[in-house]
Image (cartoon, rainbow, N blue to C red; front, side, top):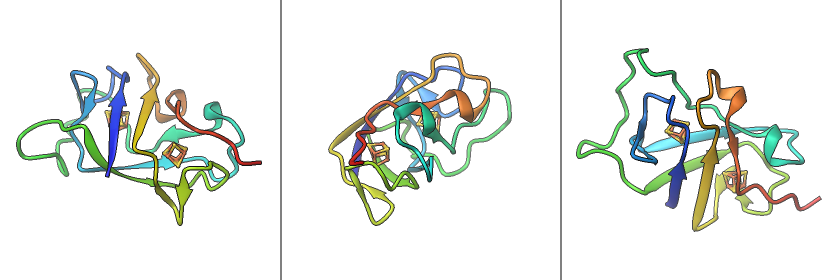
Amino acid sequence: MTKLDCNVVSCSYNDDNCCSRQDILVEGTQAKTSSETCCGSFAPKGCGCGSNCHKDGAKKETAVACEATECKFNSQKQCSANHIGIAGGHADSCRETECGSFVCQC
Ligand code: SF4
Ligand code: SF4
């Protein structure tokens, strides 16, 4: 599990800069920079999404599946970093979010 901070306050899963999901998927198959990644689990506030959440609210520990295989923390499409930050502020879509902890091994 990865400790996850997320500043995407426009996401329905965001709870005080934590993610209330048990798991997320970071996208960016060809990514060579953070900005080419995104949180594919983003859902805009008001969409009525609420499934797959921790029963007792947001927690720092989240299972992070990740398609950005160029990142040095990617291990068989799972994130092996101890701590990551998802960024995006007031994003309107998942494309406006990113994994700020991406480090290219290219
Ligand atoms: S953008 Fe991703 S990491 Fe952030 S709260 Fe939403 S689902 Fe969780
Ligand atoms: S740190 Fe790397 S492996 Fe982990 S979620 Fe971010 S891009 Fe994926």
